[in-house]
Length: 326
Image (cartoon, rainbow, N blue to C red; front, side):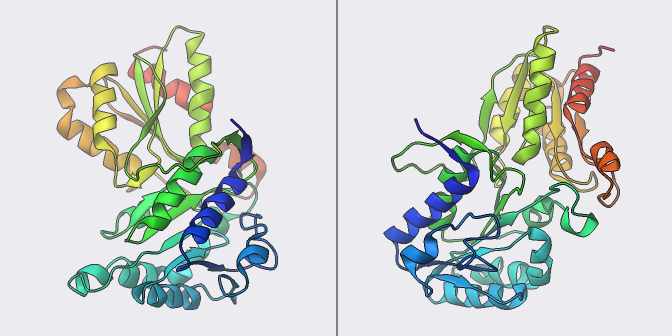
């Protein structure tokens, strides 16, 4: 199987879907002439032309609103944000128009639209360019939220998102665009709302998603040398959440650690903790542990940033805590 970069998987998914369906188009800042801020739309302008790969002004509220109106009229836009930090300028359009239009119109309008771009921290970008908004959008009925962690999942899930008849938030990472992984040559689509067990284990379940899951893999390698078997679940989709996959694993391992690159208050980890204690309390042999960023704005200093972000050592310590090991 061939190996390609994350950015190439994104580009392939969009291009293949645009060849299949002429109502699909891409718009956003620098997506055309510059081939995308992170080169995720490289070559698409040459293939599809300026009517289907559209450079926009720096006006997220404006071009998001145009895309939503276009979706109401039968098109299937893909909106790229240079970073989801900039989506806050358009959050009224996303939350109050895209997410609610089907319900408010009594089913007369559906909004087949994808909003995609980077989420989370990406090094020294400062507090306003390093935020994770997965839980914000997942809090909204009417939105689906996808956060892939590798090229294979990214391509299969983006194709599913583009074909979905409801609005989808598709969140990537600036630090993953160069990541390489195996991706089939042929057509494939991954179902939205289905988690994936990336590593089977018997002692502790670790749930994560997005780029931070790499720290879980590192921790699992460390713990394996100590005789601890970790099962790692990649959510892939934050909403809808694959509760059954998590519950099945917890009923086997009897212990749960959740790793999330976001602030602790009101996060995805909190939601998972709630439904696990509600539906699998009798199976738990230890309190659920969650690992998040520090509860502060993202620091700029590289030393402070390293302390702020979760890491493999944090996962190791949390696993030992639920195993009652020092």
